[in-house]
Length: 227
Image 1: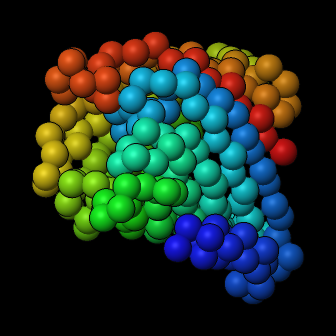
Image 2: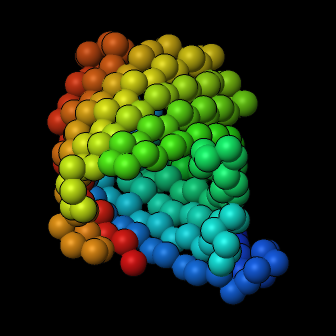
C-alpha cells in the first residue's frame, strides 16, 4: 500500500501539467527543517525536530495547482506523513480565495491504525499595502487515528516591515469528535535571508493539556528553502 501511494504521488505530480488547459504551467520545489512540526498550533512530531520536502505545479494563470510532499511526524507508529492535493485560486471582489482538497497518509503506521484522511481547506485573504489578513476554514469528515470528523477555523493577520522582514499572529479553534477541542494561537517573525531561503521564529500555544507534548507551549524555529 505504501509503495502504491508513493508511486501515485510521483505519477500525479509528473502528469499534473496535462490536467490544466493552459499548460505547461510551472513547477516549484521546497524543503526545510524545524524544531517542532506544528499544524493547527498542535505538534505533529510530539515536540521533536522534523524535516519536510514538497513539490507543486500550477497553471500559467495560477488558477489551478497540484501539490504533494512528505514531512516528519510521530503518530500511530509512523514517523513520516505523505500528502497529495489539488486546488484552485480564484479572485472574488478583491479577495484571494484558495480552495483545496488533500489526501494524507501515514507511512508504515501500526497495523489496523486509521492512517489516512481527506482534508478540505478554504482560505480567504486580502493584502493592503504592508498589511495582510487571512481567514481559514478546514474540515475532515474522518481524521487520522481515533479522531473522527473535525473542523478548524483560524484568523491570521500579518505585517511586512520591509522586503525581508515580516511578522504575523493567528488564533484558531478546533472542534473534533474522538479527541479534545482546543483553541490555539501563534505569533512570530519571518526573515527572508535570500531569494530562496526563509527563517521563521514563532511561539505556539494552546489551551490543551500541558502534560501532552502535542499541546504544550513552544518556541519553534524553522528554515525553509524554495526553488
